[in-house]
Image (cartoon, rainbow, N blue to C red):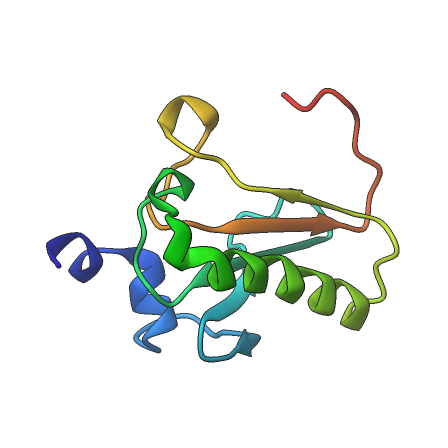
Length: 114
């Protein structure tokens, strides 16, 4: 798949660059290089999917694993409060087209977000 060959997050998950702080058979996690909070972790599937619009019924376990991994990492970081964000599409703020869940914590967040 050409998109996966040029995908920054696919390269990170493959170990070509960056360092994952968590890995399992379905997902990997690493720290955001432009953190928007004291704790800003990205949780990504190993499988290249451009956005959450590509989720299909066969991705149910993957979608659940993304959320369970966020909860696990938040506990490990001692975060009692945190925000989870998943942008879908350029107009929603997605800039890397590989599904990723932002886990942000360590500060107070306002509502509504931007």
